Image 1 (cartoon, rainbow, N blue to C red):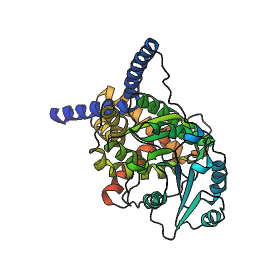
Image 2 (tube, rainbow, N blue to C red):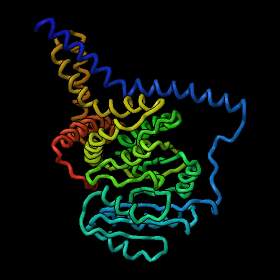
Image 3 (cartoon, one colour):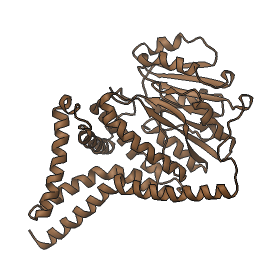
Image 4 (cartoon, one colour):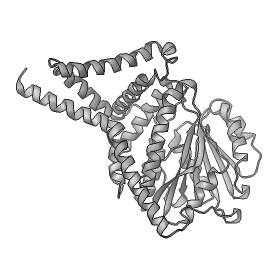
Length: 396
């Protein structure tokens, strides 16, 4: 092996190691420190000139009209619970329009929707399944109110969720408001996706306080009608593209942790893998729109650190492993290779001995992390080949 080869391998190893560690460990530390200093400064300013920092909730008579848009595909198992949840919302019924759009459902979804006789509901039954983006376009075209709230059929709102979302639109500069998601996970998901989501929620909260909202959750977000334009039918990550377009128009995008929706994640790692492959395809497809958005302030730093580098971690991990193999003659690099090997071995145990590993506290975490990043590699390939259709798939 030549000296040049060793030098290149060392550069690749340390650069890849840094880029794997940075988005998950170093960036959260930088974010926490920046957030802490910023929040302390805001508190000092508040003490100097006390005023109410909270956004007031309008009275019932002053509430704007809201159109709730709910796309559905084969959702018969959750629809009745969803409909009952909508009835329990603490929001003036006369100001609500609820639009269900069934995207070519083949189970009992259409029958359930056809049986809704209450005022304020509108059900669109599409004969052909063309994907979520098309379903949203169809629903927004029928919306009669200036505030749109998007959610999934499996999502349950807390009673005050809509009130808390729409109170921000009294500011004409606000284009979109993202809500918070509380996961009710299975025992397996609590150790994997549930734990990961708590970590993600903490980052989102700090980024929001820094004015850096990167995307919404499709489970719950609101949009000013003027910010919506029909999205391409092949759009997968619509909860990323739609708020991003509002920002591109010059509107602000906010996050309200008090506007809460309850979601039920995939109960297994394999189910989460399927979801993340589609998320990856949508992420790479959205790159073109991403670069055209005028990002300001802390947002570009958060976007690169939290999103773009995360998407590239699988490529860095492959480079790290290959360069480590090239350098394995050195004792210190053999230790590093052993650590990597242990991680992949543990992930393999999770795959081949799933039932046993799930009994070990956080024993499935390496398997979850490996599957999550493998999903982005698969999604990247599908994005390049155009082999992923823009229709949603049910995960278990």
